[in-house]
Length: 342
Ligand code: AMP
Ligand code: MG
Image (cartoon, rainbow, N blue to C red; front, side, top):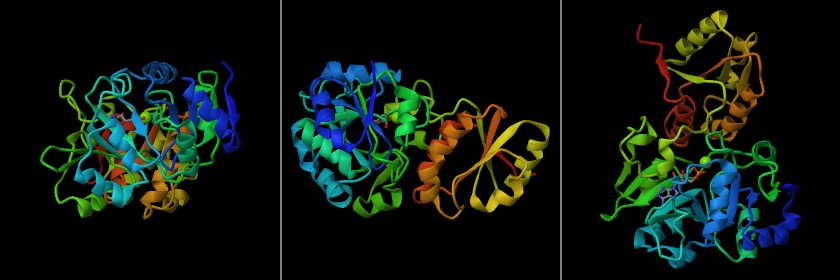
């Protein structure tokens, strides 16, 4: 299949591809999505094939407006409270699904994840298509999510009909996912740019799924099924160094004398890393910047042939830092070394 790389000028063609059961990758404020008609079970199956995604890992249904959720899911007052505060925007809400949504979209679950993107191109595509668009991130399953059209072409060229280039994604990490529980509390299933602190302002009771910080046990079904798979990972193994920043830096520099490694560092570290391959993810005081740069940096390491290991610092877990931390520990397969206990 020839993949057409184009811009928003071809939005009508893209909408037609979606209506006809094909696949289009498109920009959103979080990461690029790989979209299909969410009401067409066969089209959704093509997403799993193109990505090599396990069929029990559900897709997010993208809507033009929050109230469209009524057609596909059973909503609640708490859903509309979240919608009033955060939609359109980088939040996904898990609700009980209506029969119209095929089970191939929800990975066989009785719930459906809905999201209203704020990105103009994404919204125009959903409106033009006239159908809800189910979309996971537009990467090969297990790889870091794509934050620009180049990343999408790298993974999916020849496997999908079209890629709409809308530049670099504003946020760079996937949406925050929350589940509304029957007791009107929320469970945070995946951290993102809508932070735990922001959710607390809308709902007094927000639980955090353990799988955000810990390796899910093989037999415990996670609430967000994607959490059980190795994720966001470059080919080269990643190890996170925890502890005081100076101690961690010293540890990495010592290791670099013994082995061919690279480092994921902050602006402030640059003077120390002149003899080691590195990628910078912004200032240590700016976790939004780190979120924006993280996946691009992990992908850039994969282009290098001169290293066999990547060291990264443990990020600050407040605000969007929790999302950076969550993606990093998954990229690292939960390999963390503490340095300041000696
Ligand atoms: P992606 O952003 O590519 O990982 O795709 C969507 C993610 O949303 C999945 O991996 C799940 O973690 C989550 N998700 C989608 N639908 C549901 C659902 N019905 N229940 C729980 N989690 C969901
Ligand atoms: Mg994904």
